[in-house]
Length: 181
Image (cartoon, rainbow, N blue to C red; front, top):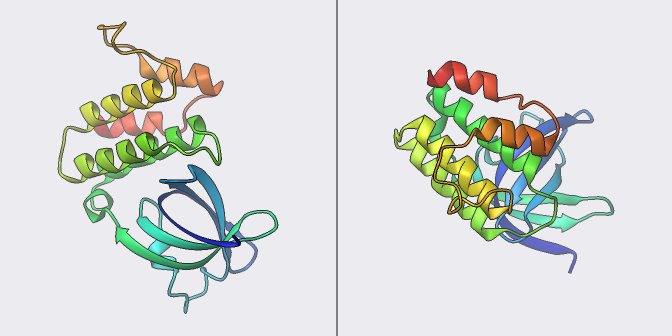
């Protein structure tokens, strides 16, 4: 099957070529995938608003030689409550960095997808940012098998644990700390 439809959240993007963009989408069924969005940087593109960072959309894709190519897209939720506040954006970008760094490509994980949607919804609705991000980190580490919360009742330093797993410093952590203090 050369074409398929999936729903997912745009967690990363970068410009490619003159009018194209490569987006990283965390999907419900395929896990984390990279998608080529041809022509979306043109002013006349009707697809570009639907593939902005943090948007939850339905993607129609064509399986190209190297990666899927976006043919159509429709937004489900753009999490506008997140995008109106810098603190919330910092928390959401931190969460996206964790998903991108810790989740392998093309591995379905519906529980993590549901966790991502729930966390974005909590943050959008003025939930305590620190608590939401910490709960997300603990649950993500548990779902990926890096932490067992039932064995440890003490609050752990998730930053050190995650940076140890990734073997690099988190880019968004300092920004998040500035905004949630």
